[in-house]
Image (cartoon, rainbow, N blue to C red; front, side, top):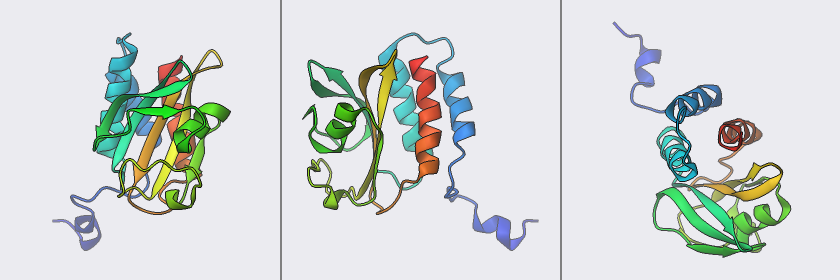
Length: 161
């Protein structure tokens, strides 16, 4: 017999993400895979399924000074983002991650989905070269924390080894 506290959480995702477990799951999923696109596709599916309160997870790849849409989960998205434009373009230009608590207050925000209210974007690096960005959107304001940033950075290291 379950006590009241236990039953309260059945069928509900926990609010704090276990990034260590996610990293182990992702590592196991891509253990013998060498195709970069397949690896990124697996990560977007895993993160979209396991992260709370997100409505879009995807990659943009750097090609000729422009970000091009890669594997993603969620509604249709902007296909091309100029370097330096929007949150993704700013991260690509500076190679520094950004957590945006309210995208509507970000001066150069590009609206792909009007339901998105907060965003975290991390650079995808290999040998100190920018390959692209990982972009995660949420309909909730202030959704992302430094715990998310640190956990996602560890997971991205699996790709960029």
